[in-house]
Length: 223
Ligand SMILES: [Zn+2]
Image (cartoon, rainbow, N blue to C red; front, side, top):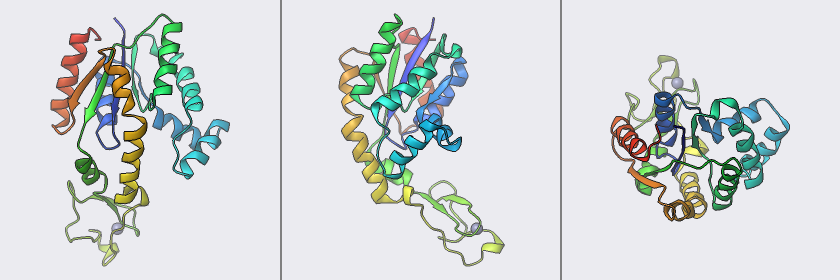
């Protein structure tokens, strides 16, 4: 049986990690709209140029453009036995488009997984990345801190102080979380009403979370 799965969660909740694990286990494509958007931007396609202008101004990619990209992707032959969608839908209008697209094809979703993590924990995770402006090395001050506080370990970077990229600064992170709560959280009601939604606490280890998701997919018959 096919497995059509959506994974939801705030930035930093670990959606990408879990989506990759589920995809690998089941042999489904991991469809990350973020990756598709970046690839369009990197290849300077017409769509990529549109996307870039939204990303530069800190806006979400508009619903119709995001939907167009996903519709094209889901029509590919590797999606017939299932897929895991990561980063889409991101709003209720996107979810309604997905519902419409699936019903046109006499298909439906098998599961929607929501990874839940407290905002303060997300801020801590997302602001812990610091970069050496000299060599570009990235440190996570929580998981692999530099030997000397705030300084790069490399001998050639002696005395260079680590900096935070704008994306990793607390005010930027908080504003991304605000956008998430405003646009993505209404999806919880959208899918909750159809009893598709499964909540998974995102604070556990990646292995424990993967096991919990696996159990849910098996119970839903999506395997
Ligand atoms: Zn360095």
